[in-house]
Length: 428
View (spheres, rainbow, N blue to C red):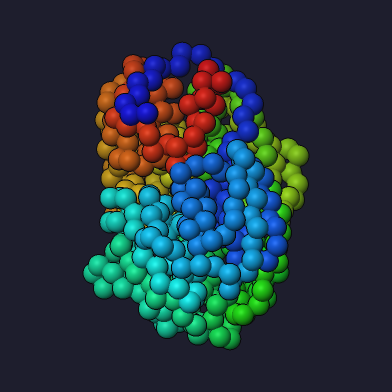
């Protein structure tokens, strides 16, 4: 799929969708299942390009992994059974695979080289490499290990206490995973809490882990035991249809089995604060994660300020929140989101470009954006920036535009939501 042209939607949206499995949890389930002893069965796995990179990495290290659709079975044999890959590991566009695997590869007695596509090659890795080097990891690469490709000479690590300088669950997870292979204890301290899927899953797989507020400690050299994982629906994917339901007049959409981990539900808090008609039913705990069914109906929305502690809880949803804000009355200000500058693309610049092209009143700032609504959107041709979230935001924008919207290349959507257009069409 390359260029896609979408017509405006001149009627309400209605229907029920089961969004794909959570990307963050799918990655982590593959990682811990591959490191554990025993058979791990993962259901509702996200069959997207990024998560498949993680599967391929462990298959390259000799782990037997089979996949049938959204069900994955891993025959884990523990840390010591992992083999040195015969070829460099290619991680495509997956920053999660790269950063989390750096933590693991640093502690294994193997030599590996990792690389990615053009976009991933530009993304900063020093935020992970630096704390791993404090643990005695041997990592080398371009710009003193800041950029891919990187080579890792794995060895026994030492535990450290590390305070995160950036709000990043990937950095936290990389250090905690490295701690599994370290002498003594490894403690990560956060200033603001980020998504805690790694901690939840480490507990489920039997790791020696202690959580105390914003501090998490893992003890090295303890075996992990296989554990089945049912992956909840990805709230970051659900966010696109939550916004669609909120902004297209007369709409009512229900999203089934969506993950409701409180470190990820900032999008729900924002919608409610803006005045959305949103309801959660059938909330329950599955595989250590809260899930439920979300119904969203169209309503009048008002602009708000989004900043501070909520930002890590909705960092991936900010592009679609910007579209939401363009259809709300008054001004919406997004601050403290400088992390968007180093995602798949500079998402602040990309969002401002796309929505400006479509007629929104939006201004970028160093750490966010200012959006003034309510603004009618027009058609036009937009760039997806090879970024799945920008492409999907553009597709949802087409629903309320007054003319056709053309996306230059929608192929990146397969990274996180291969069935996105099928689900969109089912609602129209």
